[in-house]
Image 1 (tube, rainbow, N blue to C red):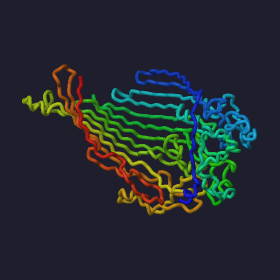
Image 2 (image 1 turned 180 degrees about the vertical axis):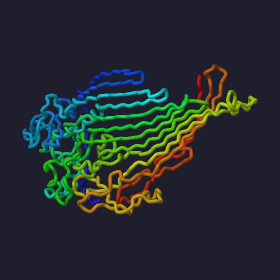
Image 3 (image 1 turned 90 degrees about the vertical axis):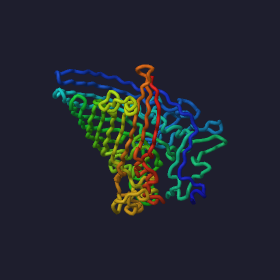
Amino acid sequence: MASFLLGVPDSFDYENLNVTEHGGWEDGAYVQDSWRATNKLTVNFGLRYDVTLLPIYGTPGSRGPDTNYIGDEDFDKGVYIVADLPPACNPATGIGAPCIPGGVLPSHVIVTPYKNHSIIRNTYDNLGPRLGLAYRLSPNTVIRAGAGKFFDNWAAAAQNAQNYQASWPSVAASLGTNLDYPTSANPLPTVSWSNPPNAVLVGGVLLPAPTPFNQAEWFVDPRLQNAYSEQWNFGVQQGLGRSTVLEADYVGQHSSRLDVGDLANTAVTPGPGDISLRQPYSYMNPTYYDKSTGRASYNAFDFKLRRTVSAGLSYIVSYTWSKVINLGCDGFFATEGCSVQDPYNLNGSRSVAGFDVPQMLSASWTYDLPFGKGKSYASGNKALNALIGGWALNGIYTIRSGEPFTVMTSGDIANTGNGGSERANIVGPAISANQTWQQYFNTSSFQSPAAYTFGNSGRNAYRLSHAGNWDMSIFRNFRIPMSEATRLEFRAEFFNAFNYAVLGGCLDNTVGDPNFGTATCTRNTERELQFALKFYF
């Protein structure tokens, strides 16, 4: 409240530009063959190569807001890389941003060595082999296996090229974070709401700051690489009679080079005082940064029983027992915008993913009721046959484990400049036996960590309750004597047919919040009924 009344912002986001990109594309080539080794064994193998040429942000030489006179920070080497060198600033002749103050690059600032003004390097090692096997053990039994390496070539390629859009020495876009944190060098706030970027105007000409290291932006590692996934599976299919197949599979996956977007150059260790004294580069502000350091794994056992239509009945029953583990937290770019507690110990955030669902059972069916003309239970009465015939029942039933969640705290308790990304301390049993929406977990079991420390509770260490759902429908077909294909269909559909409420939605998981521990909405929708008439011709 005091900061608000004084007009002292904690952060800001300013943008006034057109986004122009050019030069990006993806090329791929592959070879593939199938070989019938014996009358029982078939082998499929191949090799694919992809190359992604990342687009380049901005128009070279432009003085407009889409200029490529911009730069990117490299937090592995502590330097700032500019895509091209603009002229020296000269307010007297009207030369303003983008320009170089004094005409000489500041310390730790370099020009990209690439002639096409690119900063992010392309990836040239995207080589993906494939192998598949199918073996007929008996007339009713087939064994299948496969493995391959797959690259996510274009994921966020356009986004990464514009991460550092209009950064120094341009001023058309800028971010600011942790502006209201006193340091020994600046014990009082130096940023006002009226000019958050501290823009410099000389004679009506807008100039960039003397150095690029006080700005904040979504910078990206110049050595960013395309993510890839290594996948494998092994399974057995067994025929049971003419219409039923039983299948059991193991499925595995390991993903690497996933994008992790976090705050970089924060203090290496928690502690009191000026965070710049504990940063790797004291002259660089903490700012957002994308790197290819994420990893994930998935292992699952899948069971499926499938019956094609026989005697009017078809169904699929499937069960999955699985586990997903990753680093950081979850979402687009794996962890972008979701800071980990300690970015210098990414492995310390290794845990089940926020979308991990260990067990899931799903059953779906369709059944043409055996009543009416031509069915097992026909009546000699035409009127009765017309009333009871032509009906079909359908349904989907699912029940699954709940997703994990983390209990957090607010504020920069560790004093690392990492913002509100700390986990709480746990001092007792987390999950209560009598779970209600007013107290979804034991709030008394969690506390804020002591000053200048990290929380000791785990990432995604707690789990929402299981979720179940029934969807059902009933259909009735009426023949219309216009042609063989003409009919009228009536359908009544019931979503969440039994109106079962799954608690745990809108969960407040932050210690100190007024509604800490409450789940004020459900994770599913209420029962919905739908009626329809459909005319086929």
